[in-house]
Image (cartoon, rainbow, N blue to C red; front, side, top):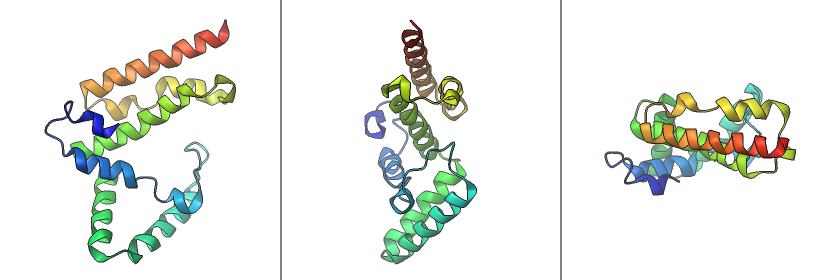
Length: 146
């Protein structure tokens, strides 16, 4: 998704955004993918610890670069980090809309309607994309109720 946004964000370092997108879930290589609404602080702590051990084992140049990216991603101050975070959340919504509605838990109906609007508000383009995803969600719910 990030690669497709070069024209939408010409002043952003999209290569850096792509790097953020590639590494953001590396911790899940060690713990598995735990859904956000089920992940506990303990799960995050274990994941972060294992990821840190792995990053430390890498050559110093790569380790330093990864740590810089993670710090930037956590701080959410740069345009690049905001794009990454928005895409991470939007991709989850798109993927969710693509799954059979029979797999949705009760809380996911409301979550899909409200999730990530605050994350995209820095960008008119991403806000419009979020609104289109909401339209897809509402259409899916409507179709299922017929």
